[in-house]
Image (tube, rainbow, N blue to C red; front, top):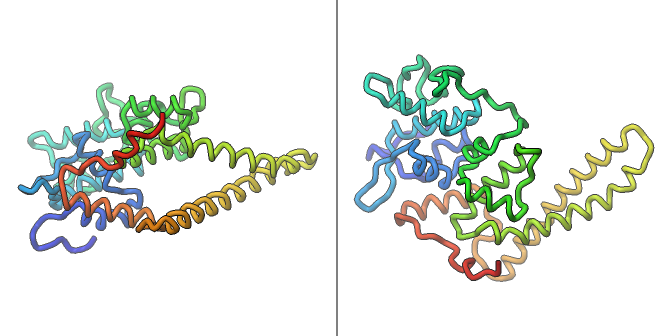
Length: 283
């Protein structure tokens, strides 16, 4: 962990810098969402800037670790933190050791502080399907937002459950809402994906017609390779089109974008809703 500034607090961009090596998916929008949900409560400067002290950073680390290592829903993590916040209980982010007997910043042992019925949520194995509630918690979206994504055909369900692809779509859609991009605006992307998928299916169709035992495995591997190439081409075409249009920032990485969002958050609060131009887009 990098040294904390002499002033005794961190800005949101500095918090990202401290946590990103351990949690590559951490972002400004994720921190804002955790604050909105009441899991963290950083102080505010008179100007409105968020100010994080060491305990806030450790609390964030605790939350992110519990999500990553134990696959705990946010409601369970919030309940554990709430119990830790009670008088006589060690705060999960105060440094040293928590009330669970573990080091601060690490999720307590599975089964500790079981919610309500006395049973903590079971850890979710990689690839395990999610319930609607679990998807909402992990993606950081509301129930109406999820309903809208489903209405426009952006999420794939397996019966009544959701896979990792649905989780990634929901997380990305949540990030796009910060720019004023709504689910209805993403139909063009879905349509492009459907056309690209049709192309890939056409290419691998002759492989599937083979009678060999490994034909389906070969077709799946070929489809994956084609998909990776299609995504690489898609990115290159977008970057070229943006450069031709003279738009600054073409070719930025996700880390670059998070850094910019962090600087915007430091510069003004509340952050004005971007992307108003989308409101006039055709439905």
